[in-house]
Image 1 (tube, rainbow, N blue to C red):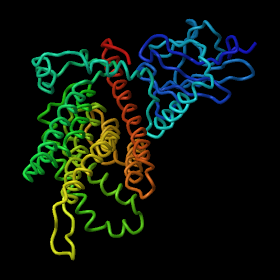
Image 2 (image 1 turned 90 degrees about the vertical axis):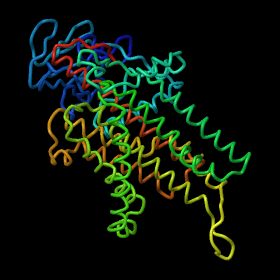
Image 3 (image 1 turned 180 degrees about the vertical axis):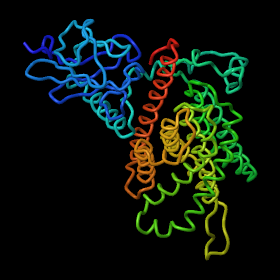
Length: 452
């Protein structure tokens, strides 16, 4: 009987205790590698593994493992290579691994298999581990929980010496954001109130409020989501507001400058790719406003900063589109005529599509990738040439280009599909950021508050 199966069920290597608790290493005829190097198939967050890389493979019915860069302990016996059988414990660093049966999937799980394939593909593209241990119902379970005004006010006080948690106090379980939903409901209600007032009284003085509120409502609500998932809670609302304002104007200026100087060539040869390259470069450049602030050393900080800049760009871009569509050329080209219905349609569509992420998601990914490389070190220009950054930047440009491409959207399904990829990459970086904090806690001898 093959040791790779138990009752004909496929097996995998499962971490049952230690920093890598819950991780699985699939076993098959092709070797699967486990380690801390980004080239490994399964990434470890166990700092005690150091340079150890474990390869497991199914060969002639037996499961073999081979450790390089350090020895493994099989049931207390140090060895670099051996056969692993059910019931045995393999210790790597501070983590213990055992063989575990995988639950077979039937035809009814085809949708889940497609999601898993996409999850693995996106994770591979951005160089992180596929999302695991995520439960959407649990993550958003606090949305309807009652809170007093005082609790809400205290919730938004962060980033000060008195409110920033120590490394030991950071909760590394999957975050449970809730405030962004309440803010979205409030913002949409205010927007609909202005819209109703205009339709009821036909007072054009309501139009600027409609234009601005409609442009701010969903993007800024999603920005609060990024604020909530920043587990270190070391970024203040003041810092976000400052970056929102300076980043938005500078990114739009940079983009306009590039468009005026080089985009005629890029537009001719690259089309939508040129648009993505120009605008993502302009927004990424604004990350240098905070890149040298070493107290922000976490991947989740970079994710938040990128999303803040992207949100500012999206808000004022939407306001520009709304303003442009507020007028139509009069008959015989004699001036302009006010055209509120087109403006309102533009705001509604762009607001709804903002749920797919758009600029906030794309720049958030770029920020997360850059901070993941920088960590607690001072920034060096060579970090921009790191393949881990370049492939995430390329993904952001590709998503942006596909968004602006002339391909049919099929009732906006194109934007939904791009949103799924963008948000999946975002959650991959959230998980990676939580693992980064756990690794720091483990290295400092701090017990993890919670496991994802």
